[in-house]
Length: 401
Image (cartoon, rainbow, N blue to C red; front, side, top):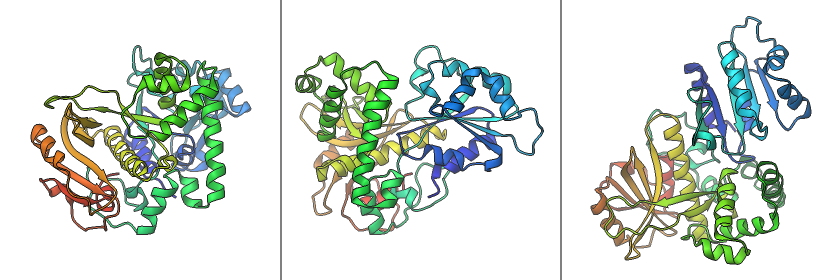
């Protein structure tokens, strides 16, 4: 399956000399995407997990340059892919040195299953040398096989009901979605969780109590979209609150879960609360309502990341809640200003939530939607609407990324 990100990375190397840093969860398609953007005879792939590749990397940039014959004249500059190199403790120094010496003679793509942007805080030795791209699971819009757009909102397009339901039930990771076979899904899920919670944690952190960490991951799985109580999680896992916070940061950095924080500006009686957590693999949500909410959350997060990474502006995802316990599932901001709001409902028959109008007035929101998961597709651009409206998920999601 051709991914939207292939064209995005191709455009990057056509327009920029900076490195591309491509990150995302395990098994989301980073390697397949990166290796497909240029011809095989002009692409060189180095995987830190491969012993021979690791030895070449440890020998230094000159060894890599000699191996690919970097001084040879070519019609197209070679593409070097460094996969999972974040596991190398000195990877930033290696990449910086290689880029500074050879960036006019090649193009460099760095991929990884852990967040490579964590070093943005503090001294960033790679400043000005890279652009960052976050690869997400499949989405409704991506299954429609449309070319990437230079605008954030696209025209609506119908998706087949079977594709929509398969995406909701099997998740957006390419292998289980394409396979759609229960025994394969069970084995794939078990192996991925083992690799993430055992192997990756062991390599990238000093956490020793892996059993308790796995328990925390399970607890987060069963309270998707709920307000987080760190003290409750600490009691159930028998560790301190500070430990819970650190462990969740680790799980976020390895793309097990992601957080959405409350929007507090311009909200009367706003309630400063801890974030809500959602899973990168929404198929792991056993509760139907939680899965629906996680499904929409994942699509929105993909959209705000993609739009931001493309340079269309600064987009963020929040939720809304005040001291009167009025709540709306999601708020998307554009350049630090509220843009549109989303409440998720399972049925098209559910009445429009009165809370939507309250928050729309407070925030002067342009678009307000109550997204119904079972609604039939309607061929209308919902981003022309300026009043709270019940809209089908199939229409809404087709207009994102």
